[in-house]
Length: 428
Ligand SMILES: Cc1ncc(COP(=O)(O)O)c(C=O)c1O
Image (cartoon, rainbow, N blue to C red; front, side, top):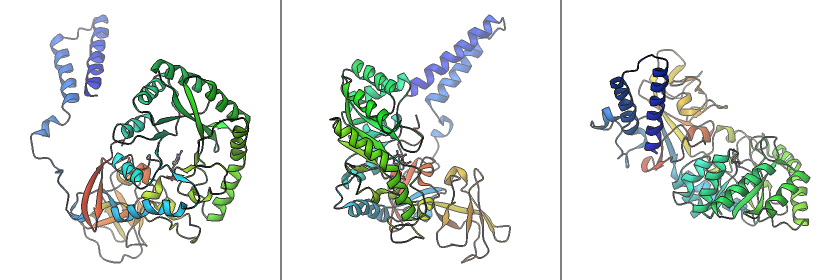
């Protein structure tokens, strides 16, 4: 990894040097060596200048009160998360539907392991690099819901599949299937493939005949094995009101179910029929052949989900409870009815509705500034001074997690574990 960064850097500088020479603008050799040496050192030893001094943020924070952590810090209430982990299985009991959690939410193999231990049938990933992190860190059943299009990614995906037999890849067009076939053949494997159906005009093959023909093609290609279909309606998840979400879901799944039926009729083996997220996970019981839900946010929750309402509560989505918070420090209270914190867009994301300050329902939190949060209010439950902490339920869990290196696992207010977000930034 480090080598791959350093070598191109030196080659680039060398090429730059050659070009400059050609232009008769002499680039002196000593300077070049200095320059390339600098680049190499910087890449090989990041933070070299401070590596000999005491670390600013010591690793050993286990046992600290969460309020002793430096902020902004991403905290996970383990009791609440474990309860969410159980609830999804309890709520689906008797439906025959399995849970294949989407790990794009947490990007953390340690949490994926907890999901598997709680009864998940596998996990989902969005990207190839995320898939690699999961597969190489103890998770063997990984379904990548996104497609790989470039030939280099396709080859890498098939190489990954060669090393990990539990890797399943999505496909949504015929050329992509043929490219996967070639790469699988080159790798000497038979790769498991699912066909992604287009339900929200984002990705996927159109339902009906195009989907059937793609599934048949996959089935016929000698180095691919057709495993089933994906149908994730991202547009339904955050619709406010259970009934409205249900109506939309029923509507979405009409053509999806007809497509599934045509595949069964044509003799295809549809082992996987996967979809749904936290907003619709409990609406799939009547969909024939449906096998599993790809819930992600259920584990952490966020304000975007809290406001959609549940089956039993139109005002608050209470199937799962918020377990993920950011701790922020008040750094300025100069102005009345206004507090400034150290947690802006780089700590909380700018999704709406914005973060919710625990214990202060009247606070409005604006994370629009990169490094600063601005809290405005008519009335506060107490007086705030600089150095005070605010605990904020995050606006949208997925992008917030992607801003941090670690999640503090908190139990009864103390740090019990530190969970590295190993696939953080792995967006390729
Ligand atoms: C394909 C797919 N499946 C599942 C999910 C998980 O959805 P949620 O976090 O709403 O449960 C997502 C989220 O964006 C997704 O893109």
